[in-house]
Length: 330
Image 1 (cartoon, rainbow, N blue to C red):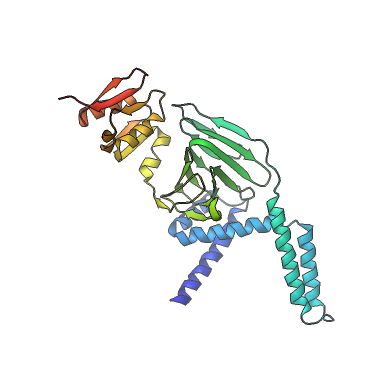
Image 2 (cartoon, helix red, strand yellow):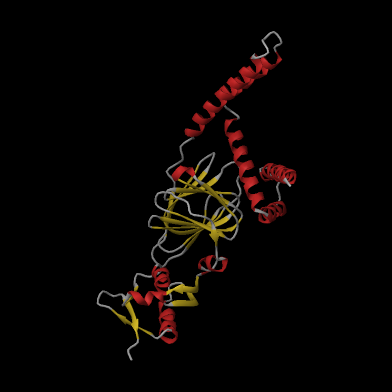
């Protein structure tokens, strides 16, 4: 059993390395990218293997041009072929060269080329906006959302300041794509995913592909598979992956909100994202009511009508302009 596991892991690693090389090729076809997506979907082990292989590939590419690393490699090579040296010299020189490589590599990675100031994109309350960024990535900003996009020669970074955003990332192996939101970072692997930043809490939901989420606390990491979501708090503490309701996640980009046995207070909070006129409850106990239904974004009238007919509630306009829901009298 142990031997079988090792062999399977080796096969996964080999396939992952092959996919990294193929996706990096300009000759990679759309059908091959679809095959890669199917391979990712087959097993979480495939996702993890690809994450590791792609990370190693990026590190090797970043360090390949470093003069000090090349010099260290030459020292080790000369030591291994010089028979006049003592027997201990070659491994010692190799170890020394690897130490130099590690130190130089870490220092190099800590000082990446600075990114430009970036482009800011925003929506107002009740607005949704579809964008196509300079690299071909498709972005959908939900209501009251703000992002900043920064693209450099070696990487692409998006910062989510607030709101909810869906990303359909364009493939560019030479420039990794990452999203910063609060105290965490989401690294993309050819993916469609959503990021929802509300106050200090961030939710990451994966539609297809794979993403790696890194939190600020102990640099904890978690890799999501399609149909999973994960939350992290204002300190960057990662939660555990949980199932994502794809019907709900895919509805808001189409202009609809799907509620399945949602608490009424949570439902109103979601609807309030899309309107300057807020819906409120006259008493906290009403929040326990569970509601199911599909409502168009910003269509408060249909929601109020449904609540009045199906849940015996009535609405009235308050002095401050909000709409207050209370139980029907009698």
